[in-house]
Length: 110
Image (cartoon, rainbow, N blue to C red; front, side, top):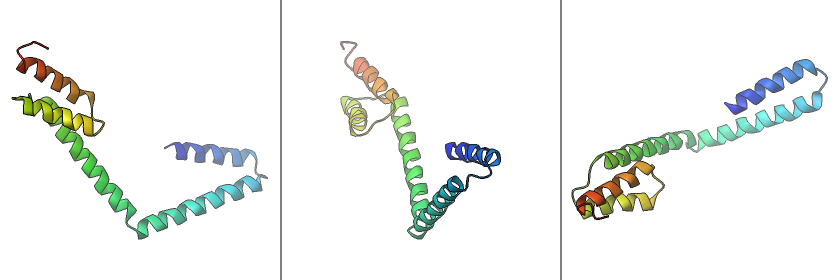
């Protein structure tokens, strides 16, 4: 998105400064480098791995949201929520839910 905006500004700049061959050569070299990087990524399956990573992250977020929306029924449930929170950065809703569960299970003593 940002790259497209920069490219558009560059194109406008070239129209205004048609004689700027040095800048054009630098941009062409950058484009060639990016194409070479994309070819290496494709050869090693990087796009597929990125897709799998994204799917894993989406599923992890779904599970964490479900945990946050499900009230704990025991201290073990609270511990599980807090362990997930401590292991990774998760949405604040999970911590808030765990605190509410702890208060409810302790009879409101917290």
